View 1 (cartoon, rainbow, N blue to C red):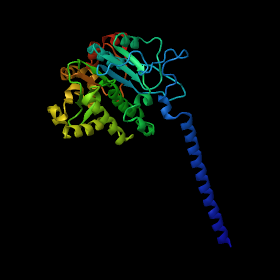
View 2 (tube, rainbow, N blue to C red; view 1 turned 60 degrees about the horizontal axis):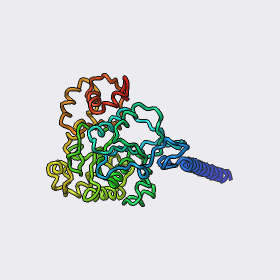
View 3 (cartoon, rainbow, N blue to C red; view 1 turned 180 degrees about the vertical axis):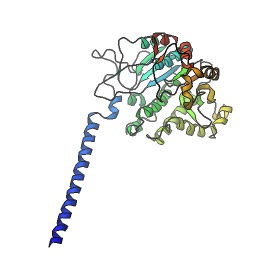
View 4 (spheres, helix red, strand yellow; view 1 turned 90 degrees about the vertical axis):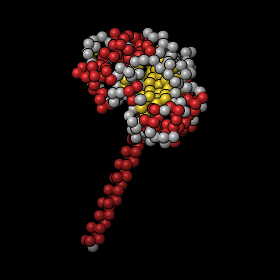
Length: 364
């Protein structure tokens, strides 16, 4: 009898444990679901009034509705995909000096191009911002917003985007950036640049379809050029198709540089990045610049930009480069003293002089 009573008690205890576990699981699911309902991650990229309003007169115009639009094949694009993802309806435009420097350098060296900075979430411009004012003092610089879903309408990725696969990732802003640069080039052609790429010379006399080797086995997607029609447009379409077909949200670089290698392997008939650089004919006219063009200083060496003891060596290595990529996804101890003799500060003083002058004693 005692044994039977013990058995019943044991079963009751087990049932109690199971019941408590279920209650905890349901509670966690409910709380998570409520949080996702209240602030779904993709809501950060929805706009409330794409044309601006009396309520928010400083809201950036949607690039698709603005009077001044990108000229196909004759525009340079930068993207800002960071959103505050809070209960606020808008992000506040906050340009650092090093971001504004990249935009100014592009405008300075490409006076015949329009330079557009596209913001992926609803953004309000601040009234007083010397750095932003210095960047916008160039007549060919424009800042606009872009709504991801509307921007994708009519593209090969429109239907896939509605499934929200893009948002199931720990690298959300990176994957949105990887996608938006392809959509931008699909819509307009032209040149895409990361905000940590500072130009030293013009692309105006270069072929319209180009990219750059990052290493002997990889191609970077920080600098891309595609013509708005013909073969360049076809390549942009192929890249968008590959993006959705092979999308992996939690694998670093899979939807960016690795995508370019996959596509160029198909186009060129080889996965040998060195062969692609040596003969653009095998890639149907797409030029793959050598490492020196954009990625001479790789991410493991990036401290050489900022320390004066490496200045002479770094400047010598960069003397024939088109641009420097400064790998800003790696933590940097901003700000730097404007009077620093590092290679970075010497180069920004030369290639973004107005932003440099607007920063005061410290470059942010």
